[in-house]
View 1 (spheres, rainbow, N blue to C red):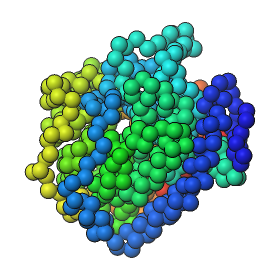
View 2: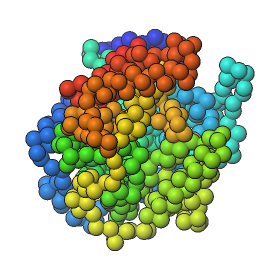
View 3: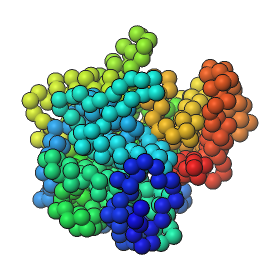
View 4: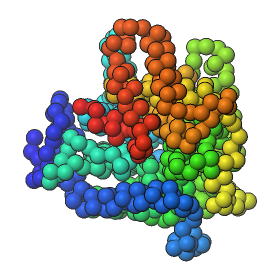
Length: 533
């Protein structure tokens, strides 16, 4: 391979990797790193400064310095791009080869091709996921399972591909520029744009992205700068790239309009990333005791006051600026148990009905088997219309106090909730360390976001002297006992052979490192990535 000056590849170069790790792609990676890495480090430092301020008693709120942007009625985002006009049902999933084919065959209008929370950054996943996307865009993708089952794309109408790169916080240790690790998100973005961008344009679509875990409009500006640099470098007209920003952090909920404004020529709307949002609520105010204490995860529904305020504000903000509002992921997956299956579909229908009625233009599901149910709900509300951009929701008036009303969430903190957090966290991390980022557990599709809720709730309860509903205080001794019991239950359920073949002890130690240590770890994927080859 011919590498640009200053670029090193630390990971192995397997078959076809040169199609993705081309000299042209790596030149773009180097350009983005050299131009933007200082700014990336600056926005990460701002995150740490905000956490320190919140711990000292500060509060989140709408920014006075950006009030002119919010109060200016004249600006709009770019009109919807080809393939992003009708987004009534979107399926999420990793860029693993079988999943790629299943997503393309699912009947969804959009496939969120996930290089982030539903993926793991194992080097083979990073590069081979891009190869799968390239083959999908070329129309040549196929797969044969170890059991001999053949998979091929058979759908007449394929979903629009929207790639989710990694967030600003994650590095890529296998690619160095001038001796430094590059941003995982910029690498994912550059590799896809270089390999597939022009192919998508030639097919009447375009290179589209979902942007995760941003905490401020400055972070959106950084992505916009990356888009402009990359389009100019590759000779693509500015505005060709389109991006949907996930509003999945607590600080970002107070900067929705500013984020749309920063991305406006490249904007494709906002998404309500509900699970990461709950994680961010806990993370942001983890030291503030009962003021921001949440009950068991299963009690935090989308109808509790602070979540209701967040989603209604998102729809109001998007439609005010001509942008799509996309609903959150339904984690339910089909089951062979008839009663469980009926309950899952009933909950999904209820969830999507609320979103469609509120004005969302589409929503996410995590499994191909749930696409039809989601589409049916939005078909009923939308009819022949492609979206609800004309529903301005001028009846919505959300204050900062509404967004901050966490203590109005009903529910209890129970031993069952504590056990569930421990079990889900360990099971998910064990799969993550083996390279699987989306895992079905107890009828739900779990990804990194839900695992983050699990360990962050445990940290918050442990470090704020919380008592369970039976009067017992959450202590390290109690946590250690329940961890041992839940690990033993997992071992008994899966059997000695599967347990011995897994990474259970390492998963358990990683979970405890992020859930009980005195110093809170910003993202559990950071120490987990350090353990990954």
